[in-house]
Amino acid sequence: MGGDVRGRGLAVATVLVVLCGGSAAVAETTTAGSGARTARNIIYIQGDGLGLGQRDLLRLALKGKRGELAMDGLAATGLVRTSSDDEDEIVTDSAAAATALATGHKTRNGAVGVDVHGRLLETILERAKRAGKSTGLVTTAQVTGASPAAFAAHVPSRDSQSDIAKQYIENSRPDVLLGGGEDWWYPKGNPGLWPDKPGEESRSPYGNLVERAQRTGYTYVRDGDELRTTRANRILGLFANEDMVDYGPDGVGKYAPRVPLQQMARKALDTLSKNPRGFFLFLEEEGTDGMSHENNAHGVIDAGRALDATVAEVLRFVRAHPDTLVIIGGDHETGGLSIENYDADDTDPEQDGPFDVPGSKLRFTVDWTTHDHTGADTPVTAEGPGSARLGGTVENTDVYWVMRTASGL
Image 1 (cartoon, rainbow, N blue to C red):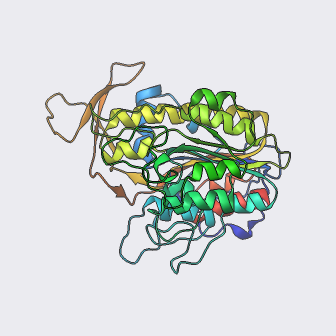
Image 2: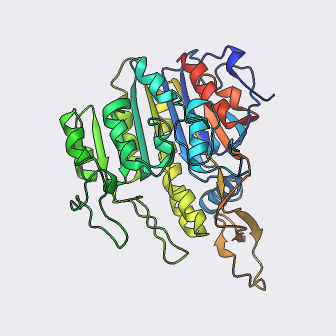
């Protein structure tokens, strides 16, 4: 089954979606793991750049040959097609991919929340906000980066990150904003909390957007301790100058966010779930993409471990709130990652490893074909009202319609 899922009358309670790519083949079952008929809450979890190869790598390295990740145990599994509507490129970037997921419309690469003609597209987060639900964006990337921005901002270029920050606090107003990207919120000459590394500097042309956010009702938190102790209902947290991950090749790149994704997710769930009308929450692990760009399989494993711990955290919430739709996926695949048997005589410099397989004497290596994105489909797993409609091959735009139909937005 493929194509547009808008007219299939899906009713969903709470939906958890984990996306790694796919297309629109979806079963007609309305609940898939939940007795609820309408999704009061929607949680979209993204492993940026997370393709089939990355998920196989994580499963083998973390759980063994017959093991299972938390993200593998959901009721529905499918594939998502990831192409953008770009005249010049076949392979999508994160901005176009996230816009398709957030709005149900494909667009050109680099565009955020607008169509190929530059017209604004209403997002699932904005629809949730209009319906009285709470909303949140949480990422280990810059909180104004392309993927979160596509759910709550509208700019012709993903590079306009101060414009995105300004739109957050003036227009879409997510209740929880947690991630990196401090430099886009402070004016030149004001370094903010985090010391600038070479090539980094504050650059907001709109003055101090952190202070402006505070004047409009946000509580600003600067580290994990402040995030843990705040009881505010509207939270802004910026925990790095740019992304929260230090990228680089194997032996150089380091996955060590100052505030773990799992902690940010837990606070977001605690805060947003206070609203009896429900919530929409976007969660993203950026390290799976950044480390794949670097062809750093060790870094991908570290980021994937954090992602799967976050999924487990979310699933504990979902099991107690079955009117939640959860979707776990990837916007595109990065690196052309493949798993190979370990061969001690193979000296290919492009390989990473060898890696041990827990519970066995087996070892494997990782090979890469590129440092860029690929056009491969990505896996999606989901549970909750309407999730069964992702159990096939779907377009990335169909993910939006599943969320919207399941929740009645």
